[in-house]
Image (cartoon, rainbow, N blue to C red):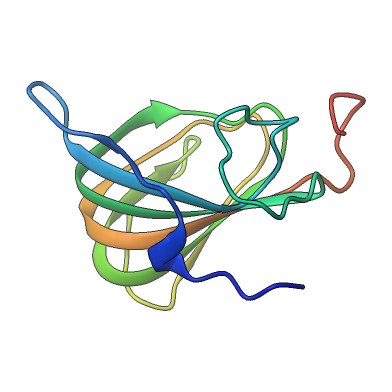
Length: 124
């Protein structure tokens, strides 16, 4: 497996007005699942995105896979499903089951890890 330098991964950014700032770098993934994926080496079995956010991630859900978020630095508050909001910090993981809505806010860097293992026929 090749070594991937985060500095070589192209970034996409969403910056106000009316939006919080979020910068994403999809490090591992595939063009079949995401046509914007720009890395030369790809895999359809998982995706990992490095994310930096200042503000609030609006409530959303992932209908294809379970999702794990690993907090690299910073802190915030997350709400997953109907659970009570909970604080998190560096070294914490947040597990988001497929189809469950979630949202969070803070000033942080995290990794989003999606595994295609065990998903329905949409997997490739």
